[in-house]
Image (cartoon, rainbow, N blue to C red; front, side, top):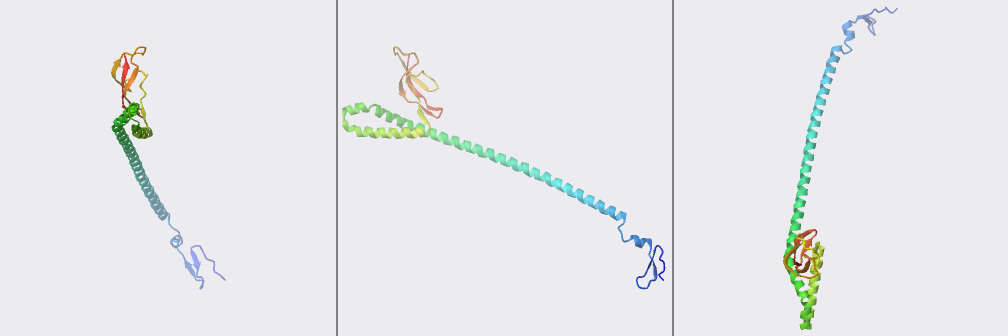
Length: 203
């Protein structure tokens, strides 16, 4: 007959001999509340450290991002400034080139203006005049391609923005300050006057 085992006692699985088990041994198999409390504290500390590190990394990332945006904005401004300077330098170079060519265009116009008189003297001059006309047309085409246009002066009122009056003459039936003769053609490059027209106006 198996002996009744009281609380705190157990039978040996083979011999059946009673064995006393202390309360301390029973409880030693489960973690104590103090151990659990220490582990929870360590976990909280670890989480706090990780959150602090994450906050530092986010702050550093924002600094890098702001620096990158600032550098990108500076580079874009620098690029725009250089493009503007390059464009302005190109425009100045073109304007200077056109200014240097205008006297040659004036000479071609003068030759053509006097062509009828030459042809009255000799017909052999015609091939040369034809060559000058071709050269003048090519110059006009090139100037038009660059945005250059002549200032239309004759018959208009004197305008100091476009004209330079070099003389005044009496012209009956003509309003004062009306351009009656053009001594030198003026030119526009786009909307900019690159050479004023030199004109004679009525008194």
